[in-house]
Image (cartoon, rainbow, N blue to C red; front, side):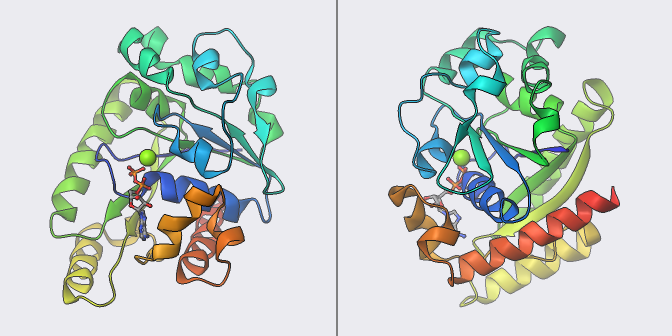
Length: 252
Ligand code: ADP
Ligand code: MG
């Protein structure tokens, strides 16, 4: 029952797209909880959930149980702990104290045994919410856009992860680095992939997520890629990623 956080301090790299579609892919064979820890609530709305009564904010505030806040989705075996804009308040109210950064981990204790996998979609900044995602996690999935500065971004992120490991969460692992938005029409994508694999070897998932407009469209219909465009390249890629994630989890 691992908790896997989808992390990158950079925005727009495919965290939420990965969290939602990996969660839906895993739900084909596992019972999955997706925790939306981003005040923008894109993972929540992307799965068709609006105006939830109880959100992850209430869990962090200690005012609700994650057991009651988790909502079913249209995808069988996929549940969501929704976010709302009031999470932006939590980002300000919380600090980097030992107590505050452990709130998510504590809140998820009551639901851990009820799911095969818990995925956390983290916000794009290094604030208190992201620290909570790093402390709650057993392992991390780090999506990286396949672009020229990919390696620099990864190096920064791995640095941050090492610091968290040394201080707040010694057990933390990187499950894998995921290349996203790979554009097969450009040589640049191939070069970036080769470069990243050369430096980071088996830390990089074999699966690469292609740039696929279906992946960008699906959230506006409140659907995962598997419902919206099941035979798209995006769906095939996230299905392959789900399998690879389960293999890596089994080998930990
Ligand atoms: P993050 O959560 O890291 O900020 P998102 O998952 O929200 O990133 O992605 C940023 C934007 O890029 C969104 O508009 C999303 O729809 C789009 N996007 C993400 N991954 C892909 C992809 N593989 N192909 C096409 N568009 C994508
Ligand atoms: Mg996001």
